[in-house]
Structures are given as structure tokens and as C-alpha cells.
Length: 112
Length: 115
Image: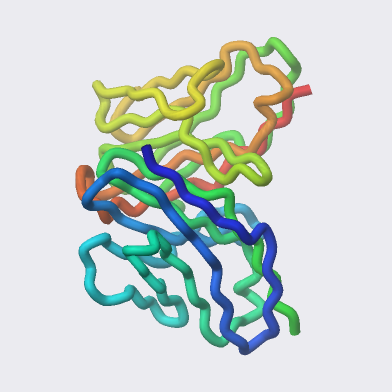
């Protein structure tokens, strides 16, 4: 069975600062993929970034990077230079090849 | 036009009524999914389909049924709606079936209120 834990229900960050959203996971799969999705207040789900379990380098996509620590089973999302438009719910997810399991999410508030 | 569409976008119904939520996609993906989102619980998988002839139960399938009418269409039915089925429902498709980088593409969601 797979499980995602996001321990921060809500986070605040000042505009232009960096923020880290925590994600830990549990899986018995040897190979798996880790994802982050963003859900703005409008409700749609937007794919942000992917990390494969065998990828040696941390994934980056523009201002998003994934701090992957396999031994600790953590896959934290780092957002650099936060913008007001980053205010949203963020979901961490894991896929072991058949289906994707999501965490409960972290709500990020970016302050001007 | 959106790649994954859901109808209706909002629905209010009464306890005991049967309702259907519809999903259509133009991405050409074989895999389709239905999730529900509740505050504090994230997204939970209701049903998923790997192709037209394949239907699988997810974590919370009780009280729901699905129909995969075509590659592009996947419908979710609530046979007899109850108030705790009030939630935001998402349809999703995915690429790279069987691969780890199975990115999900979501519809806009359907807000369902059961009175």
C-alpha cells in the first residue's frame, strides 16, 4: 500500500521569498513516481513537477524544485521567489505504476 | 477547448436521487479516473478504467458506479445519493500507461451538494 503524508495544513510566505512544502511517503514499491499538483481557488488541478525514484538529480521546473531524499522517503516541494499567484492548495502524490495516491494537501498563502 | 470536460459543473440534488456525472476527453488517453475531494482528505480514488473494457474499484467505490461508454467518455453514477457524498468530483486522464511518470490531467471538477 502507498501513503502520502503532508503535515502542514497551511503555510504563509512573504512574496518573493522561498517556501518549502513538506511531503513524506510510504511505499513498498521499488520503483515509483512522485508528483506535485497545484489547485488554485478556481478549483482546477494543475501538474507541477515529477520525480522518479531512480532519478539521481532533483527535479526542477522553473521556480519549482523537488527536494528528493529517498532514504528519508521525503519529496518536499520548494517554490522560489513566491508570487501572489502561488496562493493555492498543493498536493503531493505517488504512483507505483497502477494508480496515483494523493496527500491531504497544504494550503499556501502568499503575503504581499 | 478544454481537453477534459465535466458536466455538470455544479449540481444540487436530494437524498435518494440517482444522478450521473459525465466526463469527456479529447486527449486520446486510455486511462480515466474518478476522484472525490473533501476538505482535509485530499483526493480519493473512486473508480478507474484502463481501457473501454476495463473497470476497477478505487478506495471508496461503495455507493458509486461507472460506465466507460467509449475511450473518450467515462461516467460516474450515484445510485441513491446521500448527504455524505457532497463533495467536489474530478475526472482525470493519464498518459504513459504502465509507466511511473503517469501525469494526471484533470477536468474542472463538479461540485455536488446532496440535501
